Length: 588
Image (tube, rainbow, N blue to C red):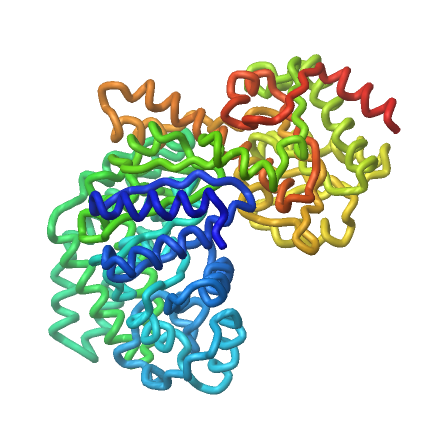
């Protein structure tokens, strides 16, 4: 049976879809509240009433397709099919160009399993047995009422290639708090782009042996290639200016010729692939250069120099695109949902905002299960990570006292402590000190590195009593679980410094795209929302079950302004860094 808040969310969401389609619905519901089942029941009821044709259930990563599938098979009558991309399911490992039309494996479709819970074992088995799981998944998804797939596949560039259709569909976005995940981005190293364009004459010569007309067509774009090459070489000057600087010259290269050239390169790639021609890999690389320029010519994008790379970024989320193209609606779910004002501005519309904690009756029901006193909160009022003072001797000393107190807590509670810093740069600067303190207190320290989340979690599970030093918004602090039998191993979450984003031209441009006349106010709101989401995500790693208990340390006096948004309905104690450390020393 559904819990009270789940029933309310289902009823309100279906009512919104009845009143207005497409409808945009946000569900802000914390840990353990059953968001996945709620979404599946919204789909089930909407299908029953004829409000939608089908649904896309969008998760954060490939591995997260299993929980919705499991719940759908156990608790609903929905026909469901997972969909993962070629990088995981294609037997020949092709993930960049659609060769399915000519692939000899295309008709070797494996039988549908009785349950999709063993999806990845099913994929591996049938790849070994010379079948194509990818084509099988595409075939099965055509008749499914619910398709579960990573949200990255909704990227308009990918979605089109996969042959999917949103007409009459309901889009369910899990972990939807980070709206920047729903904005396209392409990267290009200028020197790489120049090198690939310089290879075009070689490609034309090799292609002429296979298809003279196509070779001549590609060669006719010589002047355009020369323009692209010149523009890329000119961007080298920006490398000395700084990181994140705008590169408007790339935006100036536009026009229908770019689209036409992109289609010609796709045809060239297909011809070379069919012949297993050695130039195929070169054309694939050239295609990545064209993908960069094609995104750059889109109206709501801007190009930035980021170190050695040019990055073209979309300034508005693509969710609105699908609503315009016939989707019946979108349901965004998260335990750390941004405010309705921010969502309304960022998405352009918001028809319903449903908050579990924002409703007194529902909140009381939820707190019967997840008691608010299970998470105590301490605010350290004499420390801040503000850039101008974070390296001042007094503030360094206060930070070290918080770090020492956190490590003592890990030992005392015989669990894992998660210390969270605003950036990798700050973590790197304090790492030597952390190692000294950890050695002195005989505590195992596990520093997090970019892309190393799996290794950190594996080691922490073995040690159990340890301290993880991580960064707000990284793999460790967002969307992962360090649990055993459903219970969290994390007993302390210490946020050492408010993780406001660094000022950037990109965020400024996003704000201007949302409200050009009042962009400074929008920008300030954006910084606050992003900071709060990162903090709430990190805290969420500690309470994963009703039995979990722990301590949250918010070490930055700036947190006091946002307590009602970060830790509402929690008991809060305010102390100095010295008082915190002394309390831990006395408790030893």
